Amino acid sequence: MAAIGSAVGLGNVWRFPYVCYENGGGAFLIPFFIAIFTAGIPLLILEFTVGHWARGTPPIGFKKVSKKWEWTGWLTVLMPFIVATYYVVVMAWCFSYMIYSIDIRWGLQAESFFSSFLGDTGSPLMLGGISLPILLGLIAVWVSIFLILYKGVKRIGKVVALTVPIPTILLIILAIRGLTLPGAMEGISYYLTPDFSKLGDVNVWLAAYAQVFFSFSLAQGIMITYASFLKKKSDLTNNAFIVALADAGTAFLAGFAVFSVVGYLTVSQGVGIDGLTIAGPGLTFITYPTAVSLLPFAASIFGIFFFIALLTFGIDSAFSMIEPITASVNSKWKISKIKATAIMCVLGFFFSLIFATGGGIYLLEILDHFVTNFGLVTIGLLECIVFGWLYRLYRLREHANKTSDIMLGRWWDILIKYIIPMILIFLLVFTIIQNVTNNPYPDYPGWLIFLMGISPLLIITVASFILMKIKGKKEVMEK
Amino acid sequence: MSLPLSAILMLIFGAVVLYGGLAYFVYRAFKGMKK
Image 1 (tube, rainbow over the protein chains, first blue to last red):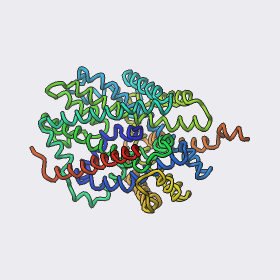
Image 2 (cartoon, rainbow over the protein chains, first blue to last red):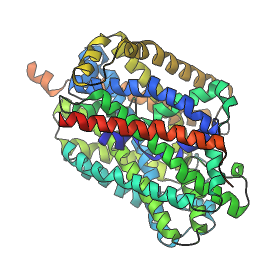
Image 3 (cartoon, rainbow over the protein chains, first blue to last red):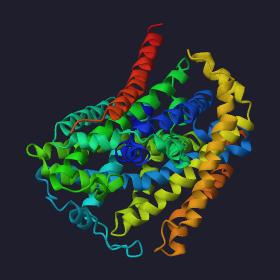
Image 4 (tube, each protein chain N blue to C red):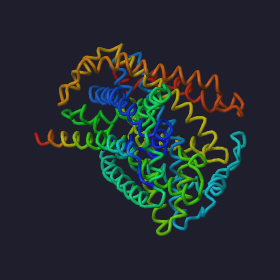
């Protein structure tokens, strides 16, 4: 349940429907399902198996292969910590918007309202002040993460028993309401009408693999950490299938909630879908709120439902990003769970303040671009290399088969050793070429791109080596 | 406006694979727990 909560996040609502629409509508489902079964599920099985086999955090798992690869485990747990520093800011926005939904404060001016809410300076070079509502939202989210995590896995279990079904139910309600609006079918038609000619486009296939990779919380040490808590007899393969299909199923459902409302907006405002922002923060804080304010009745209730759904989807993902690093610190240096969680939450809070400034949204975009396009893909590749090539992969396969009904065959080894690394290398090289030939941030100075995009990745890589070198409590005792 | 037939077919295809698959693996998990 916790793994489902972690995988299902804000991205399911604001990324999948748009990616699907952009890449052939319903036809995108074909490469998407192929990506799920050839990359998503095999990698999930690998991460579950590593955590279950090592009975510990990612640094322990990688160390079991070889002591010199422990740094990869630290890199794996530091990456989601970086993601959490800006992810919680988006959640803080949702928190404020949930309150604003009571009186639909944005009215029909959602775009200018969002801009003034952020204190938007229009440039990442002008930070401006910290927005008070965002600051309060940040405090609320970080305190929630601390309260959920400090007592360990039992409390996580209790929290996800609520935060997984609640947003799903709300999403179903929102989708039903959306589908009853005038123009809804027009939106759904945009979303699902297949364009099979796009299947010949390599970009569509890359988008499918990227979507699966980012959506399943892979390469973030989260699934390894959670699997270490599983019972010895847990069916790892079946669990991987459930997590993958629940995540993809939620994304598919979110498409109906989003596109039905987008269809309503195009009809009620007489604008084309191309003139609307239907992905990312633009969808959540501009397009959807505008549609909510146009609803004939109970508008505020649907606004509140939408933002509660986002908050509850997001909170599982947010605390799952912090759990791997706190569990790793707790396990290596025997620092109490409460202290480790408090340190990481306070550090995370201070780092996230920069994204709460007037220029924060631009800095957030740069960091997110580099982390998702380069950081996570590189870690995924390292996982395949370390466990596929530097360890006897068949042993992990045998470990998974011991407790699973569905037997993994040699096909799984081939996917982990050859197919997935090839896809990830292709994805990485393709993205690098695209970034070099077509600078995504032509208006920003190079030093800013380095500072906000590249340097955090370099810093956590160096930090991973340092954390590996610092002796753990057990090693000091042995000496 | 009604939904084009191709969109309806993709809707059925997506729902069967995702929700049908999910229901099947959840059923397997419960069956395994009973054992």
